[in-house]
Image (cartoon, rainbow over all chains, first blue to last red; front, side, top):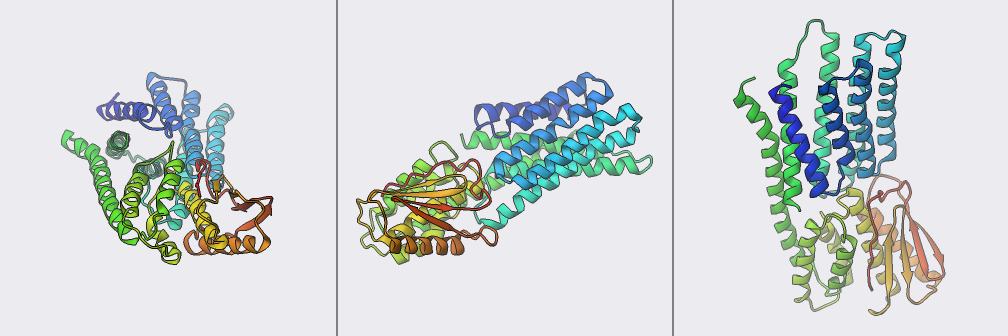
Length: 190
Length: 205
């Protein structure tokens, strides 16, 4: 595990703990899925299980989004994209799915769920002048990072010999910072 | 990646969130000043109870700012000018969050607006109990002296509709349907507008 990953993991655990102890478990499904998935993937699982596992956070994300915004349509679309990606990831390798296709199935749900989040929050932002709660800011931040990860992954897959290690590290550190910031918000508002 | 850059990347979102929190704090102070300047009726003291009830188990941080301002302003109020009070409501409720959910805010505002519209329309005495309950897809007003007459219902409907049009323009084409039963007026909001976490708002009259 790299330093960036370790930082990310510690920050994710911190936010998970804060969400349970200080928050109202609003992010619990997503953060739990994220932490468990990351731990299992880091420990090492078979490739097909790996891809299936990685589809879990977006599914949990759709649940959180639905609970948070009450937007059925956007979360359903996001969930549909995610489930489709997960099914592709788990089922198609048996039929000889290429590595690129498998990874597409991994990154497409991330893009889908991020766009669904934006779709769910745009009407909310347009409808009301109130400043958003930190949790809402966090969800949009996560979505933005997810979008960057998904698009970055897709670009890397389709551009030969392109390696984005610095980009991934930067995103990982940023993500860790957002986790810590949201945990701080919980503490602030306790 | 250098450790310094990594640290900067971790700290950047934290700094952004801190700035946002400070802005919110400043916004609270401004909101408080606006409230004190705009409130006109000690009836709003009752609404602070409603606000407390509405936010009982949810995000009450910003709500508490409103409540403090309401209590502060209520002691200085002398006259009842419902029209001006009504005009001040957008300022009053701007930024109030219930259930930490933007749509929960709508639920709360809806309940309070409907209550105000009801009081305007029915011109009931202060001791008449009106319970406004914000559900997921509807707001229910239960009257202590049922049934309300057809004319009052119509006026309530118009008041609620106007309130919705002017201040709760959440999306286009949202209408209000009012149904009169024995002492109970149900206003249905299409499309699950209020969200799943809106909770109940109890507004003592």
